Amino acid sequence: MPDHFQLLKTDTATAARRGRLQTRHGVIETPIFMPVGTQGTVKSLTPAHLREIGSQIILGNTYHLNLRPTSELIKELGGLHAFMGWSGPILTDSGGFQVFSLAKLRKMHDDGVEFQSHLDGKKLFLGPREVMTIQQNLGSDIAMVIDECPPWPCDRDATAEACARSLRWAVKCKEIATDNGFLAAGHHVFAIVQGSTYDDLRREAAESLAALDFPGYAVGGVSVGEPEPEMLKQVGATTPFMPVDKPRYTMGLGTPPQLLKMVALGVDMFDCVLPSRVARNGLVFTPDGPMNLKNEKYRADPRPISEEINNYTTQFSRAYLRHLTVAGEILACTLCTLHNLHFYLDLMAQARAHIEAGDYGTWYRAWVERYETGAAAR
Image (cartoon, rainbow, N blue to C red):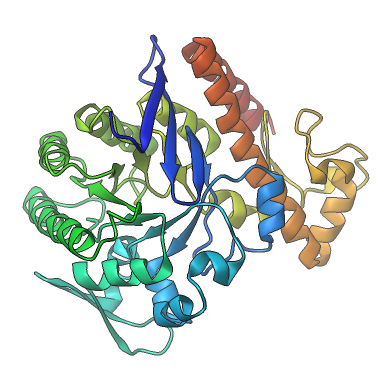
């Protein structure tokens, strides 16, 4: 068992896992949700807010931070932790998702990706050496390899080519991280399994990457437009072939029920912009489904968002939060984001407790049924 990850318990009725991941900036209890701080900030929140709601680890993005203010400047100012005032662990995405999301602004090459900056049109090249150097400059606790994320749908030949290219890049990323001392210094590098909707390609990719003995592994290429059943099928086709003794991370999703379903499939780590993005439009999460605070029925509602969720936002009424949202007040973004991220983090804390108690399967199915029934009734 690797020193940096302990698998504490596995649920007997599902593949859910309770683990503990050690990083240079602290221990992460899994399953865990990671708030997204793409530009070096979780939008509308301070590091104190994040600590208050129990955030264990947050994300930054290699592509965006290297465009501005640049990784060199961040290194000069003490690294990303010091730059943004966050003392906990940080995971940085390599820019691989931008290969998918900025498809119109990039060209694929065998040795990397040539981007046209979405800010000013300047050329930017990201290959294995560039992304590992940037993430070393940032001081990332967990650095992701660069990969090619196929779109959905994607034909088999194109997917196979993307998997082969991603494997070559993963090999190079690990070589670079080994040669420059990044891994020896206690930083982690996670590989990413692609394969689109092709189960055999996902298995082949997972097994090939597992043989390279990375500190952790991610399921990539999901939640890129496919329906939920297909998304869950892809995750379920990947996790059985990922190393049991390494953390498993599904990138860029999802809704609360989706997270619980993927925990049941053996996933340990998640990130998603959803809870913070929808909060800025007045949508908040409750155990009975999402609530749109812009609705007229909340105009004079004196209750908190949920009687079952206890955080700083609990002291404010639905009426007040609706007023802030409709009036376009900045405080609405802060309070709703605080609530939503706490909701996600608390959900993962509940998941950990139920895996430990041995009743995760029963609990999560009942939780999802209540959430989806309530959502349908709103």
